Structure formats: structure tokens, C-alpha cells
Length: 153
Image (cartoon, rainbow, N blue to C red):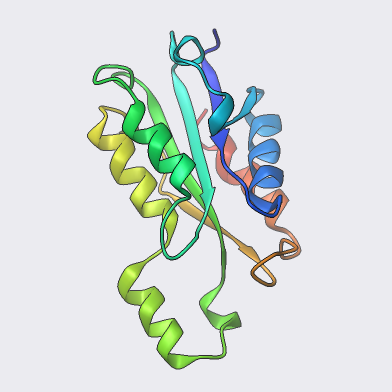
């Protein structure tokens, strides 16, 4: 049982790196969504949830984690959502940039589910950029993640 927790899913390791940076910044354990138990959520005060953006959404494992949160598990929890993504300015296709603008990224969808489960968003959700679909992270993103996360305290 902990008062702070960072939960993530990762495909190529980039989201895991961001999650670990956030955990370090707020002195919280970091767990992959598949490893989180109901016990991890007891007495929780601060929760970060992150996923890579895959087809404009969080990963299926992240969606299942959020769906599986019990109705009152997030009441009185300050939450924040994050994702990893390719920045629109790094995409060559106008059509694909339009599609991203229309469909969005995973962070907003995670945030919406956290609120639906009773959490209060303590920070605007954030996206952290990768250089290509498999990464690596763009320069400075780990430091930006740490600074963003500390604002919740």
C-alpha cells in the first residue's frame, strides 16, 4: 500500500522511461498495468497513468486497467494522465496530422476515464514526444516529465 503510484504500459520502452522519471520525481513506486493489484490502490492519494498512443488510443492493457477500477477506488485521488507520441510537427503527412487533430492522443482518453472513476485531475494531461514510432524519446523529455510531475505535490 502506498499513497503515490505511477501506472503505465509500454510497447517500445519509451513510456516506461517516462513513468520511471515521474516515479523518481514524486518518490512513488512504478508499476506496469498488468502488475497492479487492487491492494496497490488502497489508501492512494496520487495516481499517474500513462500509455503510448497506439491508433489514437491508450493500449488495450491500459484501457482494461482503467475499466477495472472499482467505482469508489478513485474518490479523493489526485490523478494525472500522460502518453508518449510522435509530435505532429514530425509527421510528414498532412492527412495524418489532420487525423491526429481529429482523433487525439491517449492522454486525454486516460484522463477522461480517471475522472469517470471519481479521481480529480490535479494536472493537465501531458504528452511526451518520441523521435519515431519506436522511439527514442526526444531530447529533454525525461527532464520535462519530472518537472511536470512535481507540480502535483
